[in-house]
Amino acid sequence: MPRACHPYRPQTKGKIERTIKLVRGNFWPGLSFTSLEELNRQAWGWMEAVNHRPHSTTREGPYDRLPWEHLRPLAGQADYDTSYAAYRQVAQDCLFSYRGNRYSVPHRDAGKTVVVKEPAGGGWLRICYQQETIAEHQRATGPGAMVMQPEHYQGLARRQRERPPAVPLPRELVAGPGVGPHFAVPEVEVRPLAVYAAVSHVAAI
Image 1 (spheres, one colour):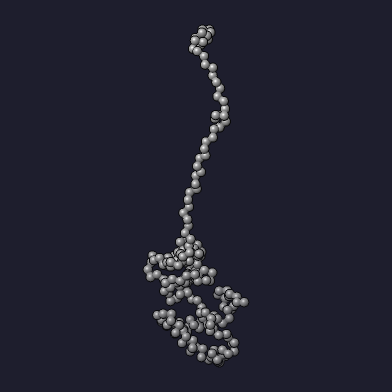
Image 2 (cartoon, helix red, strand yellow):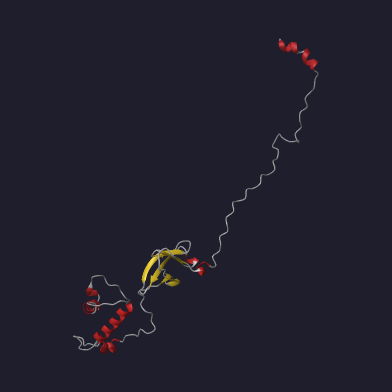
């Protein structure tokens, strides 16, 4: 199982450190290029010359010793991804911000943290979530642009407008205890006023 070596510990990295020193000291000095393609062409030509040159220890060129290495061919394997990668948080409107512009992803990925990969050549973006490509966009040329794909919003169910809860209608008032026609109303005796006049002198005593 591969194990990562500690930084600044060349004794744990075999001869890989020597290879880096060889490139820095023999390939990079005085180098000029205008594109990644041109740099790759120059690097390939330099490697062809170096790998045919006899080594000071083995007295053989690296290409001559390749059969002894029993290496597996790289044909059919994917190229190493050298894209610039950045993490971005997708908002609830399915958009994320990258270099001053906003780009869309499928609505099912709203709220997730995605990886935005921009190839070394530039020009387009690849958006990934858990190693899966979920969207691709042409990179916007100016700031403040909003790059959206309509299919990212297809199938998104519209939320029904929430209605306020219905207020129940007041029930018909019912007479409480002591009120209503089911209780008899007491009858009051009716007397002539002369009876009150006859006894008024008693109330005055």
